[in-house]
Amino acid sequence: MSIYVGNLSYEVKEEDLRHVFAEYGTVKNVQLPIDRETGRMRGFGFVEMESDAQETAAIEALDNAEWMGRSLKVNKAKPKTDGGSSGGRRGGDGGSSRRY
Image (tube, rainbow, N blue to C red; front, side, top):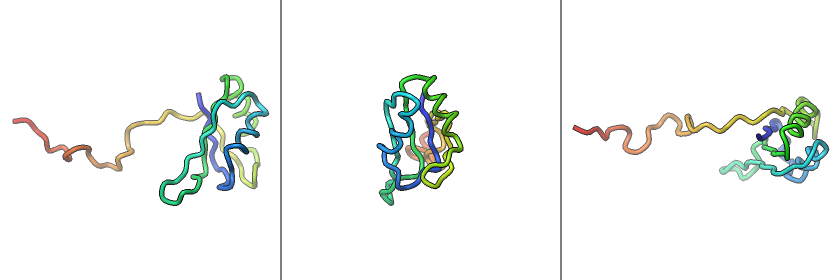
């Protein structure tokens, strides 16, 4: 399981997030996605902790908490879906490869 952390300040670093979540258990991984075009943080991240119990405790304590001037949105991360990432385009040759 992974934790989604939204509404982050653009100034947040991985170490900052790791420190906050470490109060609730062992942090295994922190990811802060970067925008490809601007090169700056996208305002959300993901935290993985050692156990589900630790993640649940962190979610309960930090959801809607004020941190770095922002109200955090913290919940269980939803699995990444494959659909919708193509912007409505069809892959390959646009679907015209019919067999006759």
